[in-house]
Amino acid sequence: GDAHAVEPLIKALSDTRRVRFKAAQALGKIGDARAVEPLIKALGDAEFAFRPDAAEALERIGVPAIEPLCRALGDINNGQIVRPLAAEALAKIGDARAVEPLIKALGDVNNAAKALGRIGVPAVEPLCRTLGDINNGQIVRLQAIEALIEIGDARAIQSLARASGLRQLRPFQLPNEILHQRALLCGAETRGPCALAGRPCGILRHDRRRGDLHPARARAPGQAAHRWPTCRRARHSAD
Image 1 (tube, rainbow, N blue to C red):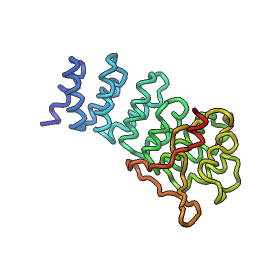
Image 2: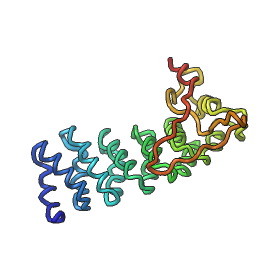
Image 3: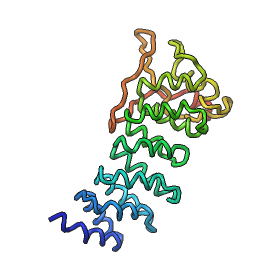
Image 4: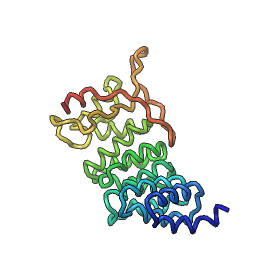
């Protein structure tokens, strides 16, 4: 049966490229926890082309891979390929246990914000705390903003307003204005390119018929991102 095939398949992870790919694919399909640590090790394999195969297998294994992936993500001795691969796998698994390790990786792992955005609602409150903590660096807070915008949860609105230096969100302040207020929320140079240039710019939806702004619907874990209007001012600034 499949259980008896696990050990031979793990050994096959050291074989030729084609055999290794097939072995990783089979281990992901079987989903046995015994394959997790060998596949975690394969994230740092000398053959770069094999690393995404290992990450995809871990994603398919799912829950048993969460804790080892979190450790791989948090290990600063892992390279700049291993940690992003771990972040991507955690995002695709979509478990809330990955949120805090991904929060810690903000500013250090380039796709941590995207991963948090993909996990969705469970990440909102930790991201709001991260954004509101002035002891966090500019890059960390900007990445928290990116993740919150990606999720689109109503609870993020006042966190973004406070980070903009606003006491509360006023109806006439469109999302573009919030993002550019007080040097893009975190003290960045206002006259330079917008740090979110070309990215979605709003967590509010403008109702033209009613003439007001209201919170957009939050995105559940694994749900496709909303198509927010892009920030025109950001695009002009970046040109």
